Length: 70
Image (tube, rainbow, N blue to C red; front, side, top):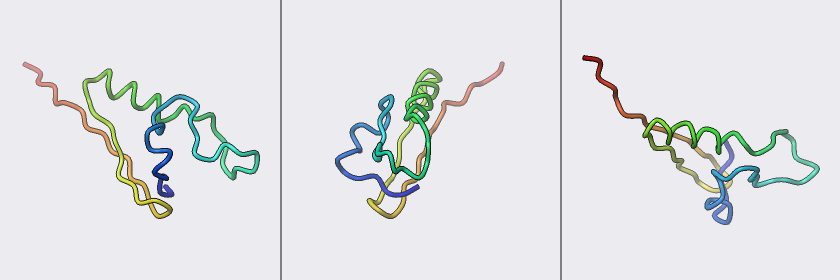
């Protein structure tokens, strides 16, 4: 996705947070997706994060621990 501004980075995983919440937004949504993803990943003892270059690109990632079946 489009790069995340420095001022929004602290809020990126908060519920209902949107970098562009204006009435003229091109895309819909409530701002819950990343918050839900974070909750699921952390419940599974994982980690979630992102790499972003403002106004260029953002890549989200997550990692989960391996579970051994005996």
